[in-house]
Length: 297
Image 1 (cartoon, rainbow, N blue to C red):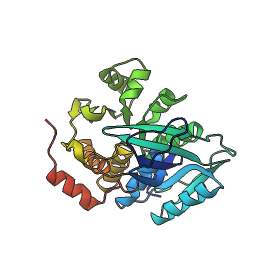
Image 2: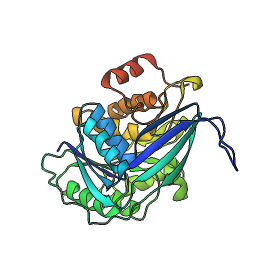
Image 3: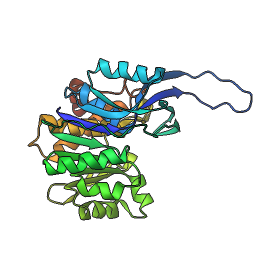
């Protein structure tokens, strides 16, 4: 096991349309994509696509969507440690320029305790806060064994603040700062107080505010992508997380500016493709992005 990702499985149905019908209307979408979804799940697929295949502990239902997901994971040779739920979770995603609207149907009532896994050889743990009991268990275990722990802090969950005490790299969404009633700079202070060695706040078109190994606060601007090229921003953050874990696993002695620069290129690729699977870059795709795109002014 090179890495372990823990999250919640979704099947994402993404479609492009100018309007949503109401009442007794019908409309025809311009395009659509069906793919795996979920924060840590999409990050795991990204990491695998870039050449380092992680194990994935995630919700799994014995239904046709669950079997579809297992087929997707098999394509990327991802070992899936399923935690049983009654029915699969589903997301309907509507991209709209640099924004996206999402309708979710989620079953997170786990029918069994989380599985106990052998983490021998594991070098990184990535969490998104789902499966809170499993997340805190493995975060503590990995901290004890000096395995890198990473958190996608997309929003405030029951044990987010407790979990942060066992996290080395916490990259959070601006939404978490809003929920805690602090500024992005204030959230960085919270992450430092919790002992996170590296912390950041992603702010969409405003880029990322983060602090490095020395505690110095830095800004990472986005890359300049023409608005006409932006197709689907959903999943861009998940790709960012999966890419920086991949970069860390391949270059563990590199600094975090290097890992985040790599991840920024990966997410820049994602937003130009419809759906999560189509938006997974290869190493060659990332090289091309880093070569061809400049930092936004």
